Amino acid sequence: MADQSPWVSKLDLSTKAIGLVASCCLAASLIYDWGFYLALDLSFLEIPSVLSDHVRSALLWFPKLAVSLGALLVHELFIQRMEKGMTEEEIIASSQNPERTRRFRDGPQKVIALLAVLGVIGYIIAGDIFLGILPLGLCIAWVSFSVWAQSPERLRIRRPIAIRLAIHLLPPISIWMFFTGYNDAIRLYQPRAGESHITIKNNPKPLAVVLLRQLDKGLLLKEDNGAIGFRPWSEIERIETPGKYKPNRGIVCSWLNVGCLQDIGPTKSVSSNEKSNPAVNTDAAR
Image 1 (spheres, rainbow, N blue to C red):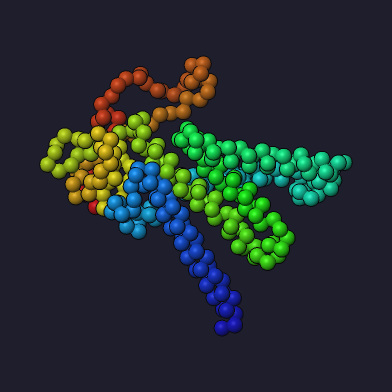
Image 2: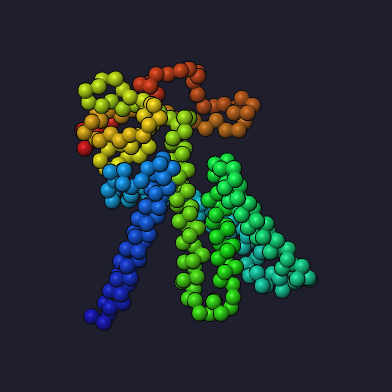
């Protein structure tokens, strides 16, 4: 039994870690869905969602999170390579003029913090024209404020590092998740979003709609008149989506029309049946 106790402890720790990660992912999905529905002027009270719908939302935000974390990792590895692995104090101490080096390295951080605050103020004054930079501005503004607020030595001694990291990171992550859902909803609601066609019972004519969200109980969609509606699965017989593969032509082919090896085919207008994916029989699928 003594030999098994370390394995039991590791298994127990792994189980707790998995439970913590699952809870964090569920919380992130709820924040994402909150931003998504708020952009459409909806609330959780108006959406017949269940727990599995929020779990499924992770499939929408996780790829973006993975790409963002990958970009941050590449940036951090590049900076560490350029600085030869030295810490901030080592870089400043090794320079010929440490005070000038310190001011030089602190300058970009102050400029970025100022631009972040200006982006937030710009959104307040001018509205959605600054929506694209608002999440980044809010995240940078919070991190800058958090660093300043927790800079006294007494606070760093009295406050555990886990609490300090939570104060640093949880608000920016929540802001990022919220506006990821918010911007996704706006992108789907725009007129340029690709239309789908659904066929409902007792109506042989397909309806042109924009699919906003697939829920456990039905489809949340944008009707052709701009209204947002919900169709239960029991009413839907057929779904046609406007999916069509477009090969990557590359810069040389796209700009100079040289070396185009792909068979693009003539450009022509096609009907919805020609350009749609194979229809899904929802009754058979369920």
